[in-house]
Length: 162
Image (cartoon, rainbow, N blue to C red):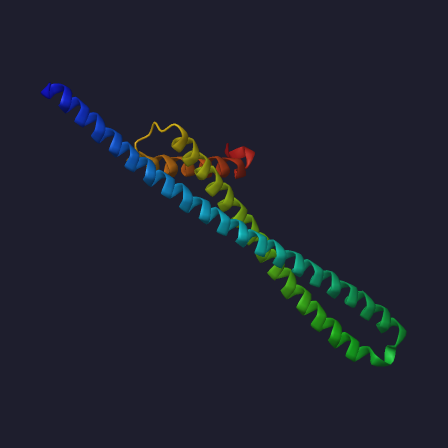
């Protein structure tokens, strides 16, 4: 009878430990989902900024074209037009650099979002039918991220290096 009771106690403790681990995994999943939502919001803001910058660039280019046409029509104002054009070209260069920076940031954000989504999917699969002890989950996520990055680096290598 004592052995049966001890076995029952061990099973109960194991079930409680499993329940605690499951709660921790659910909390981690919820946190990751929140982080993913924030990443998506950031990406959307970057995309909006990128669109705004592209529109500004189009306006500047149109204005440059117009200034060029006005410049041909009125040679008396040539110096003023040249100064305006130089300023517009400087602004266009600045906007182009900003646009390039925003595009790079968007690319980086998309990569981070994809990493977060992949890790979240791993956690969701683990929560549905857990087979990894919670202490190993972080190691599993780290290995998953490392292999993903290694595959990305391999894709960027020139063919001669492979």
